[in-house]
Length: 419
Image 1: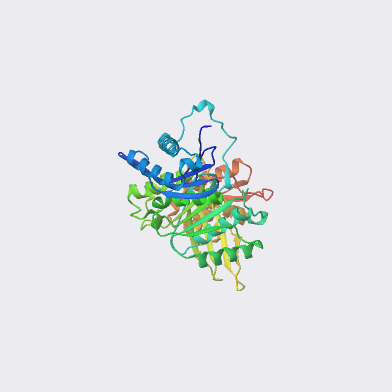
Image 2: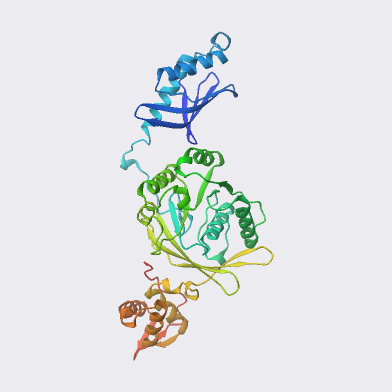
């Protein structure tokens, strides 16, 4: 029977019907040679480990001689010459073939975008979360990790569908004790009593250089969702450098799982490596946080960019740190946070009108200009557009510059949240 090759983590498992299994990993190729690590088993028992050059006759001969010393043909009836040649051919050809080509007519198209967490994490795609240091974005990433790990559902959090899955947290900034403490505190705040299933790994080398090891972990632990905290250290170089940033996202693409990458902001308030990191991410989310008078954090999440993903409304949270060690996440309207100035004029108009019930148009314009810190003349067109849409939808009536909200309308307009 012909040997069978199957993908396994960073490499392949090749099996023969005589009980020999070879695991080939850490495959490295340059124009002159292809080298890999092999772990060879016979009848389930480890036989040897080696790092042969599979495109070299001397490399293959050296492995054959070692195997013949360990398990001679006369005693075990294994033709190691043939087996090693088959190993080399299979690994080299499979590695070089890459992903198979397919006809687009054969591609099965789903009925819509799949989410790991609806509105936040597109399934099997990278998302980027960026913001200033200390604003709660890492805590938010841990919160999302706990939600995925547990498959947590709670209508009070106003979250959509959450698909449960295994989580890998790759940490470049703190340590296992700190992350474990945060995870436990978030679980406690959510009332989750089960032990966490989140897998933690402290990282110090660039992500791309550790791709083989991470692929093995993803395969062994059946990982569905990966958090990388944070992008700067994970690239191992300048974030404004195309090569290191694209190498990182190329490695992430090879893994092919849902991921959340955390990044910081540069002097202009944009994510470091913005042009490369932003283009490589399916969704880009900005985290804007401020300290609250109770010692907690008001965290606002803004959807800044997406590829084939509908624009998502801003999402606000209050993070409370309780004396008993709980960390509570509670929904909070972004309008009621220090980040209200990041909302669009149309969103502000709808919120102010609904909350006021009745007000003068000039007062509305003054309030919107105050929140956005812009001159009234510059925001009048946007305000007029929002009012026109609300009036057309029957949400408001306007008489003599007085705006009256229709109290029977319980929800805001489905406004354009593009920011």
